Image (tube, rainbow, N blue to C red):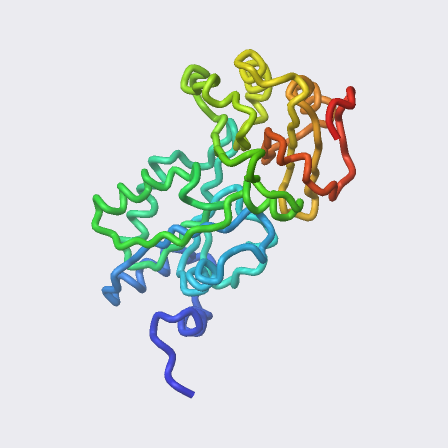
Length: 288
């Protein structure tokens, strides 16, 4: 059998099996400082939730890592499959509950890279879509830390695929828009530009803004009966899909007790979604 590379995952597991758990990360840092290894950071997309939807390249980077810095939207099922010898740091952010600020996350990645570690920054979905990856890249560039980006399946695509509908459709919705509803000022959104009947809109992080979304899109021209689809915990075993309308979507969120993470799809393509969980909230049968 060929000799293991000294910094391969298997060699790492073997050589550090005797390190006591209380040493934790400090033990890793001391070792790699002593061996002068140059660190690197891989920003990896974990996909929408189903652990089988991570890319082959992303999974390989995880297996090669010394330490994992991961977000709240990385599924427990995926984390359970990651070898225990890979150290982990949770930096998840939920609305109103941030375990670490973005500035501190940036600094953490730099410090780990400077210590010679192979770091995987694991983000839910695709890190390039609403993942604040630019800030992390800029911090790594400023510190001259080598980095790579491994894309993932974004939630809008992953959930739609699981429910059997296309995000675009010739003659119906030739355009697609992905929008973060986590905006600080409602004036940041050009609602007149969004209120078009030949587009599919997908709002990320939108539950707290559902009333604004409903009111503004109707105010700027979309009909009250326009189809809406909520997907809660998309691609997970506890996924819920709920069909509604633009006029009723605010009431729907309350009565169905929707929780984050929930995607909001708006547009005619949602009529093709398979009802994996037969749940509807449409008081008036304007649409199918």
